[in-house]
Structures are given as C-alpha cells and as structure tokens.
Image 1 (cartoon, one colour):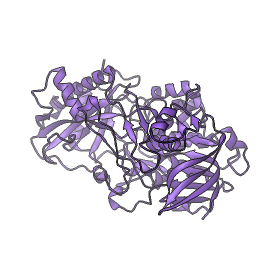
Image 2 (cartoon, rainbow, N blue to C red):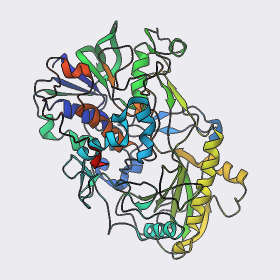
Image 3 (cartoon, rainbow, N blue to C red):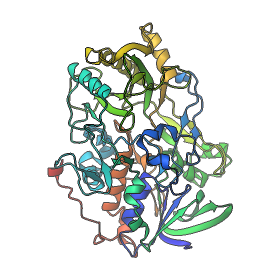
Image 4 (tube, one colour):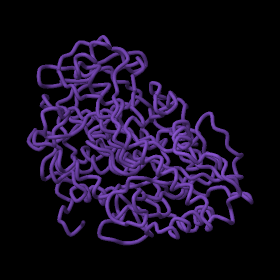
Length: 537
C-alpha cells in the first residue's frame, strides 16, 4: 500500500468522488482517496423507494443534535453517509441546482467563479440530462439527471394542478432558469435505480487507474501539522493506526466531518478546543460555526377517499418553490418550499394514517437565518460531536415557516385535490391560530438533510477558507465540500456540491496546484474544457 501521495482527498462522498476522479485524470498525479466507510453492499441503497429505510444502518454516521428549544426541545437525528458515495447513497435523489440569486453571496465572498454563471459550466459538465436540450443543460456528464413524466403519481399531478390554479408559475423542470414554481422533481436515477455520485464518478474504469488509490475503511483521527503545512493524515484501519503523507490535502468530508477533523487537529477556536481537551495549534475561530440546514415540517397530512397508488419513483415527487408575499411572482430566489409526498409523512411522536391511505404536503424555509455550530465532544474520532443547529432561533424563520404551512394547507384544500382529499389529519382542522400552528411546527420540523457552511469561504480575515478554497493560514490544505458554502442554496444541496468540486478542479484548484510538479497543469486533460462565456447563462 502506498504511504505517500501527491494529493490526499479525505472523504469519498459527493465532493470527494468528483475531486478524486477529476484529479486522477492527470496520470502523473498520485491521488489517494480516504473513506471511513466501505463500498456499498446493501441492495436497498439502489432502490429509490427504500431511501427512507436506510437511516441507522451500519453505513450511517447516525449523528444527533443537542435538544433544540424552538422545536419542542427535541433531539434531531442527523443521518450522514459513512460509505463510498457518502450521503448521496442515503438522500432522496432530488436534483436541484438552486436559484441563480442563491449564489450572489458566494460571488461577493469569493469572486465570480462562485456565482451561478461561474458555477454553470460545472453543473453542465456534471450532468447527463436527456429530457430536452438547452444551453444550460449537460448531456454527456457522468451524473444521470432524470426528469420523470408518465411515472408521476396522479396525486402529485393533482397537487401540481392545485398550485398552478392558485397562481404558482409552471416550470418545465427546476434546473433550467427560474426556480420559483412547480414541476415534477428531477432525480439522480438511471433505469429505475439510484445513481450516487460515486456510481457516477468512480466507475470501475476510473477506479482501475493506477494513480488512484481508494483507501476504504480508513477513519481519520487528525491531520499532521508542520508550521504552515500539513504533511499527512493519521488514520485508523482495522484497529491499526498509521500516517499517510501527501504534498496536498483536500478535505471533502462534508459539513459535519470536515470541521471536526480540523478541530481534532488543533485548528479552531481556542475556547472550543479547550473544552474538548484539544490543544489549539492554529486559532481559526469560525471553524464549525455558520452551520445552516433546511427544515421541513413532517407534515401536513391528508387522508384520502380512495387508495393512493404506490410511488413509481421515490415517494417525494414534486417540489414547489414560492414567494411568501406573492405566490404568483416568478422571479427571484424563493423563501419557502412545499413538497408533495404520496405517503403519510409525520415526525416522531405524531400519528399518521397507514401507507396507501394518505398523502402529505411538506413545507419549509429555503433561506433560514438561524446559524448554528458544530464542535468536537472530545479529542478522539469516536467522541460524539456537539451539533447545535439553533433551529428556528430567529423570528424570520418562525414567521416564514408559519406562512409556508398556511400555503401548504391552501394547496391541500384546493378543489384540484377534491378527488383525493378526505380530511386533514395533521395538524388537523382545529389548529387555526398562529400559536397553534407554531406549536405544530415545533413538533413536526425535521431536518431536510442539508448541513452546510461550517468552513465558510470568504475574502475576510475571519473566513475559514479563501476564494481558492485554501484553508487560511496553511499552504497546502483545501476544503471542497458543503462546509465552504457561505450561505445555503434554496433547495437540496447535492447538485451544488458536485458543481463546486467540478469548478474547483476545472480551474486547476488553486495556484499551487497549477505550479507544483506532478500535479494539475493548465494543459491537463480536463483543465480549460469548460466554456465560462456568458452565453451559457
């Protein structure tokens, strides 16, 4: 087994799979890909209908938050993928780029490469989309993006009709321009099976490259620091501890694990590290802060007059993005989202009818203003982290969430759903006042599985990473995953994570990567293949 690499990529999830695949296209670059989990072996992962059943299995990190005061003091389960493919092996497969305006704060923080226009070539490069042609869509990328038609549930068609009758804009899909409106969900599905990012980017042909080494089953304990450089990574595999060295380190472990690895390595806020029994080697106070996540209320449930046909897709078949002040407005980034699930979907502690006898309209806030934090619970990798998302802490989030629930109920009670709807089960007809709706949201709000922002990118002195995604204060460490996001996009974040990784590698990463022997050069097989002209926007 190799012990030294040109580049070590930590995490084989959505970002790491892309980064390792693209970097290893340069056959002179020796790439090591470290993953705590193993290759997928559970056949349920590939079945789109079974994604709700995967949580808590051996390949789930099974994180938990601390009790949240504004969600009835509940502890929230936070499943994350401990497997090659990461959380793209567990998620609901919805592919949503986000609204172009979502990325303006990114551009302000790090330059035009992180605007929607700058990221667009990465979106195009990544996807294999064949439903229709368009200048903003990719056809030959590795990641399948499937737009269903005939498979869409008749209940979902009625829900879409209700939204449109109430003035919600009609969309062909969620990824071809404006996001506001309703459409069937685009999905990472091929031939009826889930396509994880590892399925897409780490094919057997890619894994056969002699310069790419997958180190599965290797859990990272900490980085090895030497001044302004990181010389290697201490890992544990089957009880054996070893150190792997590299010229460059790329952290792609996600918004939970990346800051934890940094903090266990002594990089973080001195007070936070001291509480965890870790000696501070580099004062970076924002590591683990700026945590953002989407919540959805599970849910506005309706019993039905007749049996609901089983989903032919993955249960949650259509998102509806809206403006709270004017649900007919079609431009600008939305502030709320609804989703139709053709099953009873209720948070723990809430009773719902049996499967096949109900449908659910989920609702949530697209741009929460609450900001949380992640901290290590101790010095070792097995010490449970402290995850405090500060859910619904701001009045903005509580107000918009209440508006979203009211909008969901209007859709649910619309005449277009009369053929299906029998009665509202949750929160129930008796819940009408704002206080009653707020109490229901506190009991029903659950993670949408989109943690982001814990190693935010920026040009200011407090930013964790700079616009090149280099860890501030270190010459050879980069963070390329959801933790770099200054703000969370409107929808599911997996598509944006892939675009971040594609953009970073296509631009050569950072100046050091362009000039270091044995690594990416501007003449590498993939550098410069993306057209960044405004005509693509």
